Image (spheres, helix red, strand yellow):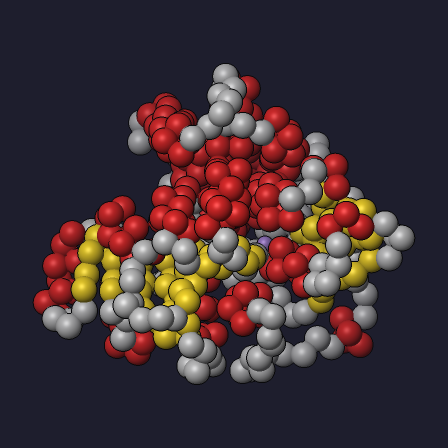
Amino acid sequence: MKNLIILGATGSIGMQTLAVLGNLTNEYKLTSIAFGKNIKRGIEIINKFKPQFVSVENKSDCKYLSELFPDIKFDYGLEGLINASTYDASNSYQTVVVTALVGSIGLLPTVEAIKKGYHIALANKETLVTAGRIIIDLIDKYQVNLLPVDSEHSAIFQALNGEKKAQINKLIITASGGAFRNKSREDLKHVTVTEALKHPNWLMGSKITIDSATMMNKGFEVIEAHYLFGLPYDKITTILHKESVIHSLVEFVDTSVIAQLGTPDMRIPIQYALTYPNRFVLNNAKSLKLEEIMTLNFQKLDFTRYPCLHYAYEAGKIGHSMPTVLNAANEAAVHLFLTEKISFLDIERIIYEALNNHILIKNLDLDTILSLDKEVKMKILTLKGV
Ligand code: MN
C-alpha cells in the first residue's frame, strides 16, 4: 500500500489519475489533494475519496470547505499547496505525488515533496523546463523516483526498459501537430482561441492545448526528455505523426528501433507511472486496432513552420537561465492569447523577444529561478496592461 497525493486534482490529468485510482484501491490511498477554483468538482472528489488534507487556491473557498467537512484539514494558497505536496499521513507507507499542476507554480511543491522523500509522478513538465538541473540533482540526492506521466516520455521509458543509456542512438518524440497542423503560416495570422483549443487527438487542459498548437509543447518535451533520460539535445529528435498511435520511439546503436503504441488514452501512462514495474488491467481501455488504422503518417517537423520548437531547442542547448525564460515568457504569452489580448502569432514573437533580451544567468539557484520567472511574466503582462 502507498499514499497518493495529487496536485491539480480537478484538472484533466488529475481527474484521469482519480479514474485510474478507482482501479488501484488495494495499491493506493489518496491522502492529500490540491486544486484551484473548481469547488464543485473538488467536493465530489472529497466525498468519493475522503482525503485527509485538501488545499485550494483561495482563503474564502478554504473557509467554506472547512465548514462543510469538519473532519478534513484544509489550507490555501502557495503555502497550502506545499503543505498538500508534503502531507504526512503518519503511516509507514511510501508516498507518490502526482504533479499535475499547470505551469511553474508546480516547482516549489515538487521540490519540497522530493526533500520529504516522496516519489514524483511528473505530469507538470514546466517544472523540468524551468528548473531541470535542480530537480534532477534533488532526485539523486534524496534517492526518490521521478516517473514520467507525459505519454511520449512514458513511451520512451517503456522502450528503455532493461536497455543501457550508452547504447541509445537517439530518441524520436512524436508530435500530433496540434489544432493547426493543416494550416500555413499565412493562415495562422487570423486563428481564434476557440479554433486553437480544438486538439485533433487529445482532450487536455487549455494551456497545453495552446502549447500543442504552437508546438511549444513538443519543445518542452524535448527539454523534459533531456533531463529525464540524461541525453544531449543532438540525440533527441521529433517527428510529426498525426495519428498519435506511436507515442515515441528509441533508436539504439545497432539501428534497431523500439516504439510504444496505444490508443490516445492518458490513463495508460498515468497508471504505468503508478504501478511500475507492474502492469494492471485498465478498465474500459480500448485495444489498438491496427487493421482499422491501416496507415500511419510521418512528416519532418519544420522549424520555420514551428519556430517555438526551434526556440525550445536553442534555449535548452544554451541552458542555465534560458529555459526558465522560455517557460515564463510562454506562460505569460499563452495567458494573453487565451484572454484575447494578443493574436496567435504574437505568442512566438513575445517568446523570441524575451529570449533575445535575456542576459544569461549562470549557477542558478531556486530563488533566482523563482524571481526570474516572476520578472519575465510581469514584464510581458504589464506591456499588455494585465
Ligand atoms: Mn505529451
